[in-house]
Length: 176
Image 1 (tube, rainbow, N blue to C red):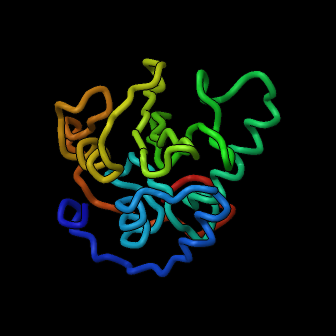
Image 2 (cartoon, rainbow, N blue to C red):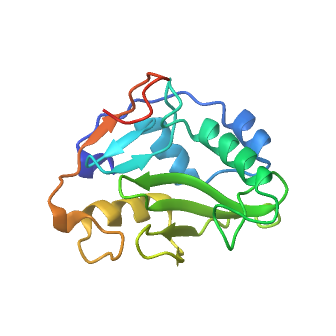
């Protein structure tokens, strides 16, 4: 991803033990590398990556906490139906990315199977979840660079592969 985007890694220092303690599971190693290198922001003006952001727009943990709270209020219905939002000790989805077209990119996490992180993706206009047994970075790379990676590949739109870090402004809910 660094080579694809020409990005200079940020080298963000992260207390992974605290984050993983709150989640109740370890996160994928390649996601941690992406997080430390990029923080949170937008690839190709279209693909939102949750990492760390001084605001809340691209903050992975802030977004997860909001999702858990919202899903718990829905009772018998879930915003990620037929799944649930992952809560510590359980099984469910954790969103790590999305697009301006409301596509969603998540991991299916099962606390009883740490280390198994299939990517589940849902295209807003198609509905239904697609499962990909690949790493976060491979999925993201294919979205950005593989025009044949449908329905999620965006390379055919010639949007480039640049990365723009998050705004850092908590009042700004949209990327700049």
